[in-house]
Length: 294
Image (cartoon, rainbow, N blue to C red; front, side, top):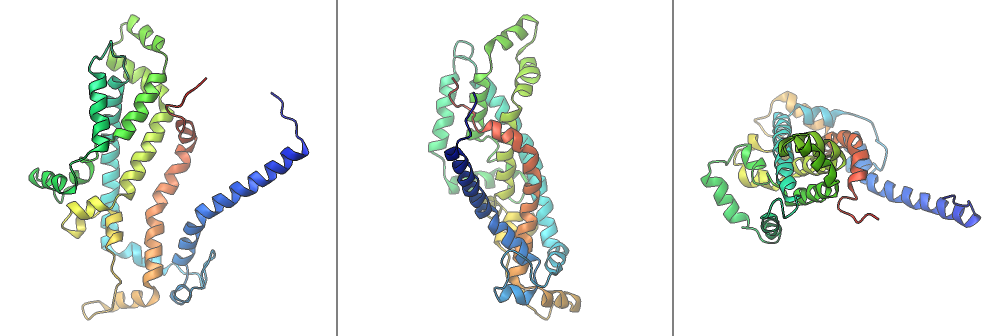
């Protein structure tokens, strides 16, 4: 189909690009501002002089943030959580979605399980019963308290289930004729063909674990067990006291609470910003999971 480049269409494209560019700028403007503040001097940030470009460029806030043992410890707790949580989530999501995507003649309890999962979305036990369960299982102050309660995401299961259902049944039947079993079909056919769906679900899992903070505060009693986001939520303005060393006092004088927090926020967002471009091409394909195709 050839689209004529009329004057009206050209005007539409110009305004469309301008509008989308403005929306994109509004999305990234807060992050640019945070980066500029983190790279600015204490006086410039306190005076509100920083907009989208650093004033009196300095990296003292990053040196101070990366030099704090609490920040480094929380960062590695988050890395550990993301790795464990990702593999547990993606494996359980695939193993749950695959049988639910089978026809009712193959898996007769499919509808009952589907209703059960949908029911769990609408109704939950609540914070107090969940906390008591974690406590009596002995998971408080352990990394498992951060990954096991959300091990099976119903949303991810539904996305993968709908994608599996859209794959032609003839491929599966051909594999059975060649002697493959369900494990072989899942590993050799469905998983390779589901890269867009798996990439989309992977992005959801990574961002979900990395940005989660409330469960860390809820299930962790010791600061050294906090993930990074939970630590950032409890950051208190550092004040000079008699227990500080002279070297630490000198570092504090070079940064402010605003520049220090801005540096921590940007360092926290940096890993996701680095991972997202590699998954974007699959993510765009995965946006139409379960949609009607004609």
